[in-house]
Length: 300
Image (tube, one colour):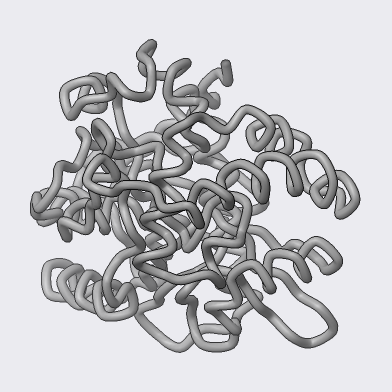
């Protein structure tokens, strides 16, 4: 299991102490919270951020806490897999992508291993994707439409946030009203943005302007033959250059990956929570420290 990073300590002009790490020329300040529960307001988190934010900071928030706070959960137990979903989960994803197309395209070894051991529940998952997003996303072998299986209780999954750009702007405005500091808020997803020539694209249904979104399996497949730039910014509080947004998103993601509590996939849940995936509860998720956001500050 990953060990936590080595932190440095500092304090604000008002004496508020905080910890941080340095990554790629930036100071990364974690915003640690309990597990944000379905339909729970994130006002408490914005209050904590306001105590630390400086003029010109970037605030990067993971998509799942926003989605869960919006109540964008779907219980996959309510879905009965059709023949189409069964075909997609077994023959298409497990065998064709896991043993043929995946190795040919050189997708991550971890992804290939996970595809080859897809559980029975993946049939219900494919049914959810088919009904909510259609074939274009259901044909993607994994991480379909940005649906997150790893940070939701029971048989629930979280969809992408609703209108992440609007949420980012509201957060920046709230912090401006509290502190008189203007920050840039980014809401990101770990699914990749790719570049081919001068074209940026992602398989995810949404992304910031400048990144062609909603490419589904076509974007994912072409992406394996293109440059993988890292995490995808879904929404931003201001107009931002794509390369700038991706750079900041990747700094945040590098920090998240360094944490012992990182749950990148459904398969890492058991290690982090010491629990089988079907036994994950709000209580077990609340038993660990979560880092839904980080403040990122350029080191002068």
